[in-house]
Amino acid sequence: MKLTQNMTKHFLRTLFIFAVLPSLLILSCKKDDPIPSPKAEFTYEVQNNGFVRFNNQSVNNTKSIWNYGDGESDNLLEYDTDHIHRFTRNGTSQITLKVTKDNLQDVIVKSISVNTVNGTLLVYRSFPRGMVGI
Picture (tube, rainbow, N blue to C red):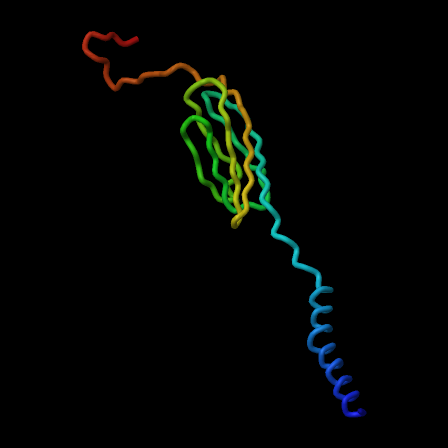
């Protein structure tokens, strides 16, 4: 009988040491902080002749993908914060900024109005026959 009690105590002690105690330690450990998600944000300033200065204020991203709504786009790295894009027509454009980091992403869309594009200027090296220079 005493042998059975000793075996039971030994079994319970072993179970506690190798099963219960490690489980408690694992459950009590603080989980790693999650990877911060990227957050897309930008400001812009409309300038003369259709130029717009964009300032990427996104955080926690490694890549920025810009779509200017005029058929043009740019792929920039996180340290490329300021850049300029030239619009060739006056009007409203939907600007889309998609930022990524690992498998995470965020997108922001802003509508901007550009009314600083001047008329088209044709420059000739020489005047065509019959055309008089000013």
